[in-house]
Image (cartoon, rainbow, N blue to C red; front, side, top):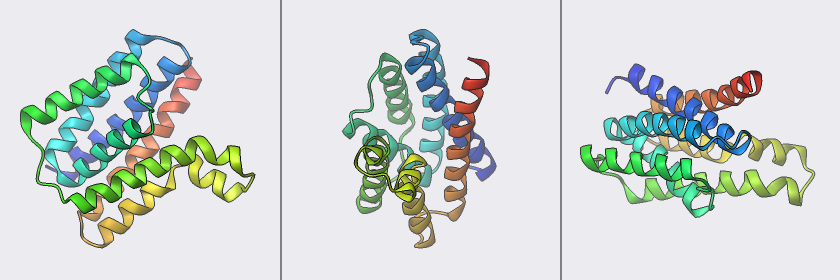
Length: 175
C-alpha cells in the first residue's frame, strides 16, 4: 500500500478516534460517536490489513486500551467489532510477537501513564510526557530505526497523533 494512502488512513483514524470519544464523553451522543467510531474502525482496519507496520500500531492501541479498561462505551464496542470483522475478512500480515508485545506495552504504558501520572507527581516533564503519550512514539521510532518496519510508518503514526489532537480542537471549536 502506498505510504501516502497510509498517511491519509492514519490521519482519518486519529481524527475520527478523538472526535468519537469526545462526542461520547462530553455530549453523551452514542449515535454520532458510533458513526465516527465506525469511520475510525474502517480507516484503522484498512491500514492494518494493508501494511504490517500499521498493523503493529493499531492492534497495539486496541489491545493496550482493552487491558487498560478504556473500552468504556457502546461506541467503542461497535468500533472494535467493525475493526475485527474487517481484519478477519481481509487478513493481517504475519506479525513478530516480540515487536507486537513491545508496541502493546508502549500503548498500555501511555494509557496508564496518561490517567495516573498527574495523580502521583507534580513533575511537569512527566506530566507532559504522559499527557502527550510519548511512550509509544519513542517505541515506534526505535522499532523503525531498528528495522522492524519502515520509518515512514513512524511518520504516519505522528500524523495519527497530530490528527488526534486536531480532532479534539475541532470538537471544542464546534461543540
